[in-house]
Image 1 (cartoon, rainbow, N blue to C red):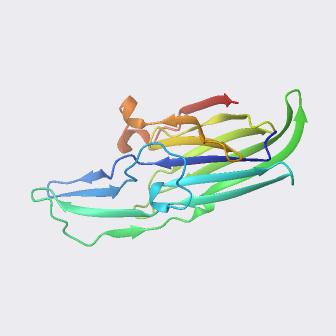
Image 2: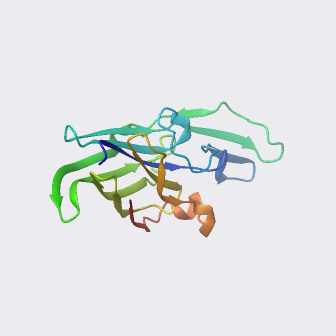
Image 3: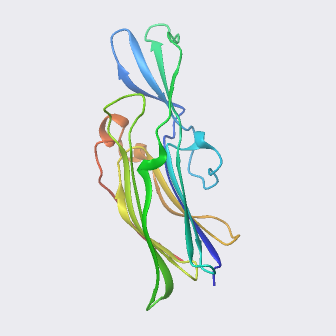
Length: 201
């Protein structure tokens, strides 16, 4: 039996910087998160663009949700020299677009569980209007530590879903790198089409 199960969802940009726009004279870059897949990013806002961290407490029948939005840094670079030609612009979107909109405890064939709905829609704060980073997940967490996730997310940026049962080692439920299928910020941010359907003991 699990006493506490954490589920962590994050969207992040694997590269340190990405090109967002380009003219004949300048490149406009946005900061990435410069990392691969990992669980332990809760206390580092520079490690993600969006995150939802859930803690399910079966003893007290409680679900706690911690939303997070990382900062956005925009940089303009001279296309010929690579020189930064104006100060970086830092923007910070609000975390009210990262939501746990429903949770309910129940029991069934496979035992006691809690059903949770997570949704996210947050855009680039320094470029308006811009497409949102989106996800929508129906999550079921069982008292024995098993977790199922059904839903979808954008084709850009990278996405990851993890679980941590009590004090055991974190387990990756879903990992997606847009570079593996050739998606970029230009193509993938407009596609809300990456399906997730996983169950893991």
